[in-house]
Image: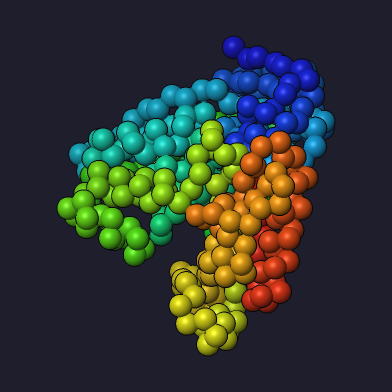
Length: 337
């Protein structure tokens, strides 16, 4: 059953813990409820607020927030090797990863411990440790707010890229994701391209699904603050992608600078934003109620009582310092409202 809240405080609905209000918040189960609402009201301004892990409110939201509440998971096909599943948008992402590991299914284990709902995963094309959601996604099912119909997009039609998708571009303000379909496999496919992961997995006895998940959970727990204790949205900045020549010039001065190839594009190189921020002297930096986390410089934190504006001022300062030190521009990964 759909629930509608008016003038709702969002402090407990965003992982930064900033106190802002929303004119209206609608919790919905499926397409029929969305169709009913849009036929009745057809709001000019709206936004999908899932678990609130990748959103920063900088002011009161004058519009309608839609929050999915359906969490069902269904096995569509199991041929003994490959398993296709359909997962509804409100399902917790890490619960899905934990289930897949317990079932012996490979494909999303490197994405362990990412705070997200399943519905948000394709929007951001969430990723970590050499894996991205797009690697396992086969179909995204969404409600089209223009035609009031349910539509389906294949992986190719989603136009996935680094922290990008069609849902942040052409379908922004159009699509409300209802469910995502994934293809997982019982065939072992360990992805151990990151040094920290290899070390942690080997220390646990080798590349099993359980060991990989435990290793990644341990790495993340050692570096990333718990939003329930210290308000944050995880990685605040995207890793910048620069021309190969820019990376080569920087490596002359900083030979230990982390850098990664871009699949299918030899002219570009991905740099580590956290390393750039750290080497700009900002890891652990604090400005009153906000700061850069002391163990992971990619993360901006709310030490208590910060506003979204406070966080954005700090973000601007971080971007400025990195630009001054390295000539590289970094930008937020978090959705700013």
